[in-house]
Image (cartoon, rainbow, N blue to C red; front, side):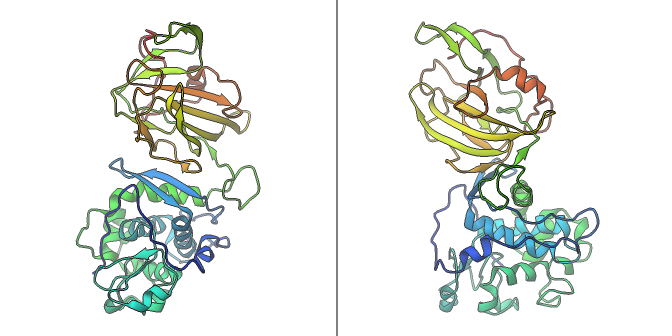
Length: 396
């Protein structure tokens, strides 16, 4: 039986030998011609330096480039495996996220020689090894084979071209696996003592697959930080948690009494309310600010009728220590990035939202007309009216 590794949002990595790790991170484009019609996966493009996404329970998962490189190996292998397709790749990513947090784990207790192969850390569950925590004793392969991410990926998918010829069973050896919930399909291969844990990683797996197989719209292809065009706009607070309290424009600051420009819109919400990324993008800044208290700035490339536009979104006054992202992180629309607070020049818990077309150094615009024009949804997909609420000018 493979082991289940409980994943937390922040992981301390114990990196093994560095040689050959990048060989798995920078892969040649995959051939998706063998995938079933309608479920084909495009080629793996740029591998970002980091990606942040949320589980179904709202836990934030942050992945680095080594982990995303292993994800690229799984995607490439799945796209070349006839019968796997997009759904099979999602199942495999969910399994690897659950079992190892997408890390190649050696097992020095069971197999001391496993540490002589490239690895990202160590595990100690029985004789389990690697991304999918496969066991040599169960017939999955030798130590040398199982310390190869490509071999483990092929073994997980299984099928007629799998290295195990159906024993142990890979995903394609499970009858009617496509009819199962994806978490149940992962469990059918993994045979874990914790069968219900795989399903929570489905949104993380989807975020990985979308990010790694979306070709950049601008910039040099293959560069890790090339922008990805985002067409989904998510309102930065969950539905039913907020009230609009102050709009964009000249006003009397409630803390200082000065008559000055208010460069964003304020939404009052209880302290601790999740703050969500407005769209897919890259974190440009996450840290202290003398006025905003704790500030997060995300750079986006937003699709629109006139073509893609660079826009920076800024989220001010978040709680100390609540920031779930760091500079350079790739985030998906709707992922939690912090919690509502009252840091800096503030008289109560609220989110101050700013939008800067062209980047954060460019002038801010009124967020409300922009949001209305881009039809934001709540993170659950329901429509949002950004201007709902009273304009009391109660928060800075």
